[in-house]
Image (cartoon, rainbow, N blue to C red; front, side, top):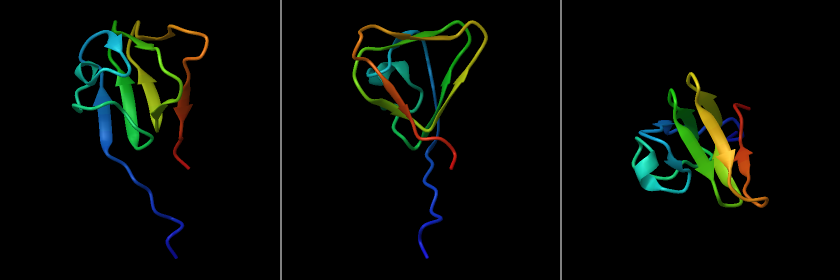
Length: 81
């Protein structure tokens, strides 16, 4: 059976405030996917400006924030099934 496979890449942490869709925002060197645990570090504000940004889970440091810049911006979270 292969229905118990879990794919994980580890963690993508914010390096600074910025856009979710910007590679430069993330320590992993890429935009997070459904396989990534995302951490928005202390005091950082990450802004989602696209529809269907993705993550496995999102964690927040002290005073960290996730903002949506448009009415169509969204985040899909896969979860830890």
